[in-house]
Amino acid sequence: MLLRLIAVFAQIFAFAFVFTPAHAQDKSPEQSFSAFTAELWPDAQAKGITRANFDLALRGVTPDNRVIAATKRQPEYGKPVGAYVNDIVSLGRIKRGGDKAREWAKTFDAVEKKFSVERWVLLSLWGMESDFGAAKDKWDVFRSLASLAYVKYRHPYFRNELIVAMGIMQKESYARDKMVSSWAGAMGQSQFMPSNVVDYAIDFSGDGHVDLWGNIPDVLGSTANYLHKWKWKFGVPWGFEVVVPKGFDYMRSRGSFADWAKLGVQRADGKNMPSTGNGILFFPSGAAGPGFLVTENFDVLKEYNNSDAYAIAVGHLADRMNGGAVIKTAWPTDDRPLPRDARVALQKKLAAIGYKVNEFDGHVDFDLRDNIRAEQVKFGMVPDGNPTAAFLEKLGVKY
Image 1 (tube, rainbow, N blue to C red):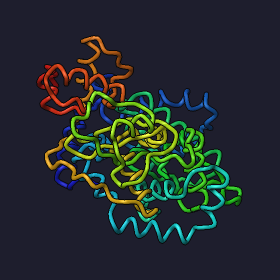
Image 2: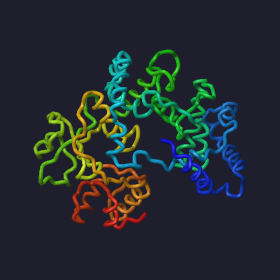
Image 3: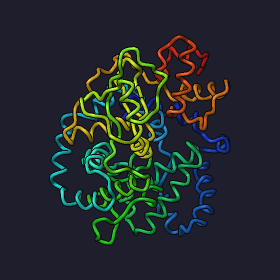
Image 4: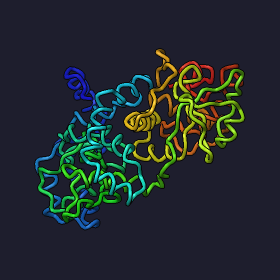
């Protein structure tokens, strides 16, 4: 969602100072951006970018402070998980998904046969990323990526993506004005970053071109190829809502479906547990809210967007479009996801007291949730693995 106009202008002026690179402090913005592009050229040339294509990509490009301001927006963390999921899994989107399933049935048949990825998952991702193509890219991909690279946001990721985008325009002979994206450089109805386009985008329509903006078979085939290469397992649910018995030991987080059934954990929809496979018990809003058993396919969805709330929304939307039940347990109304700086501070604190933490990126993975459980027990809290502000206060986390 776009920021309200007043917020945009307020942040434009703020970020103009906060994100000025150190090497540019004594230069005007125009001069320092010119220095950035001059430093970029040798690396682009080494990757096979021609001078003509490099100049075409950056002609007239200046830093876009709206892009920098947008880095502070986190839709998956800006509201309670339940509110986020409910907004995504709307009746309107479910209906539109059903309409698209019928409209493109033959394409889905072919995609499922080739990639072994269920159509409902592809429909859900399509609906999430571009509202089935209705939401159009409006940003200049080169200006967006150059703005992020210039201020070294997540450096060197966006700098590399900028060069890759130049390579895509050059290889595919796209017109300059076709290279449009989200504010962060994600392109087309599948919202692939440039490196994703190179790695996963395919010409599924067979017309000799890859077009993620307007060619639906290419969009669906490319999305399926993405999930397939990340080892999506056909026929395995992403997860499902469960109800735990009274007196349940919340320290239990992993096991086979047979193990969970023996412990008295039941599916909320009344169906039987899968006959094989494993599930991780996950309370995205704490034990007072819905609980889920999630599978390896949940992790595959997070490869598309590394957010638990996003993966739940995609999975649940896919289920609903396929006739699945609503989430039965009420979401807590007082659930407030931690901001990124708090999550990073939590990771550093857990590492400091002896837990193994692989990355300090603010993503709370299942290993970290097990560490949180161990600490929650010490404080007499329900060990549901859900980090809250109250837990961080007890742990002495400052941010």
